[in-house]
Every structure is written in structure tokens, then in C-alpha cells.
Image (cartoon, rainbow, N blue to C red; front, side):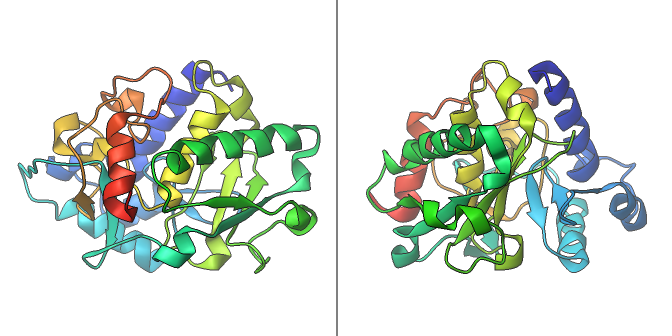
Length: 266
């Protein structure tokens, strides 16, 4: 879909699933209301914060509780931010980070080669900043490219939805939900190149949260399950433009490079 339409749709999703801005408001939806309005994508996974999956109702409830229990006026001094799980950084081990294998489903049809190239472009943004991570495309697995394929770490598959252009996962996500899903609207996203969009999604696969969950953004608060790594960056590849971001094209920034080195080494 056109970029302007996608922004509107995603803003609506953020407002519904992340309760953007309402963690500090008086009129917070009940758990039942929140659960009922959270989007479930075609694979059966709940989606929060626009493009982040949660694997179970229990995790969704934890996400809801983290929003409604957010302290008022929370401030920190730093962040590109890494996701945390029970206070621990959500990241790959050093050995796994060097072997981030994936396949690209043949179900993309005539767009298969374009997806392969866009994934390589998105991966190179992070790989170019540190020698401690390596995404490896395993073409031999493309014909059986799904979450059940244990010969790759994750799969890249097509999806048909109006809720997002693409979505990914975090390192802590179980294998059964570990995929990058891409809608056809990625090819009509205006100044947002497919490589940069997938660079954003691959940022999630490395453990990075949306930059706009930081209080400096002033909107689109998500939750407190993150740790700061670098100074706040409104132009970060991990920052939605409609959440007071300052990038028009999801470019990879100096702070993004600093963040990946802070988390995985240089």
C-alpha cells in the first residue's frame, strides 16, 4: 500500500496495541479490552508496537501490565535500546551471532530475488558496523522455508496484511514464531527502501527495541523492558517517523552503529 496509508495504519496499530501515550493517562483500557483489540496476524501471532510479535496470551498480559504499571515521568540519559527479558539483555550468544542463518521462501514468486537482495542490504547495515555478527543466507533451504525448518535459525516468508509492511522477532522468541514476514506493500513504501525496512526488522532480530519507546520521543511509549546503549537518536533506523522521528527514509545512523557495537562488540 502507499507509504502515507501505511503510516496511518501503523499509527493506528501503535495506538491500539502499544496503548501509545496512555500508560500515563487516566483512561487506560482494561485487560479484556486490550486483548480483544490486539491484532493477530495471519500466522496466529499477536502483534504489539506495530511489528513485534508476542508468543502467548501470558506474554501479552505481561506486556499489558508493563504498560499500565509504567512509572510516571520515567527518564534515562541514554539509548539505542536493547530489549530485556526479566532484566537480562535479549541478545544472541557470541557464537550464534556469527551464524544467523535464514532462508527466503520461494512463495515470494517473481519477487524472490528482490527479497533476497533486500535482506542482504538490510543485513549489511548491521554487519558493516561490527565483525561480531553475521547473517548467512542459505538458499538450499528456500523450498522448505518456514518456522519448522531447523536447518536455519529463521525463515523469511510472505504475508498478506494491511497492518504492517514487515514484522520480525527477538532473540528470545521461540523457534515456532521465529520468522520475518513481508507484505507486498514493501515495494511501494515511497522513500523507505526495502533494504532499510528490513534493516529495521533485522534490528529487532538482534534484540533492538523501537527507539521511540524512550521518553525523549514524547509519544508512542511502549514499555520499560529495555536497557539504554547510546544517546537518544530520533533519526535511528529503529525509530518510527510518525512517533516524532526525524528520518524520512529509515537510514542507518552513527548511533545505530554504536548500539550494535555496544551490545555485541566491535
